[in-house]
Length: 171
Image (cartoon, rainbow, N blue to C red; front, side):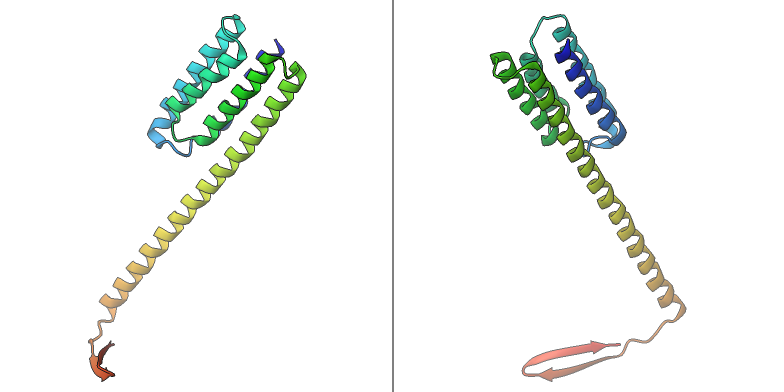
């Protein structure tokens, strides 16, 4: 039961993080579909673990496929499930105790949460900067057009030749 509790804790933390921030690599219209499908598959797989139909190693291996199916560009999510599958393999082989396995699983989810939060903050900062840049570009462009309309100036050009190069200066 401790394994199930640890896995469910990880799944809940993961669902909360993705639910609050969305997925950085999936278009906004597909986030809900992808997240819903991912959660449904996760629930089915871990229900089979609770029913002792599959062990934790098989469940984590199946979760790799689920992560690849619903979030194919999310290397962070796929990587965490690959790491958890390796940990489960060591646990099933008897190389790790239940307490050590749970500790390592929790540590891996903490690393995932921190990295996931950082990448979403970076993405949000990029989007904010892009909006600022677009605003300033639009503002300056409109200001320039307004100045041209309000104060039309004649264009005077002069050309000079210097070392076989023609230089034109327009004002």
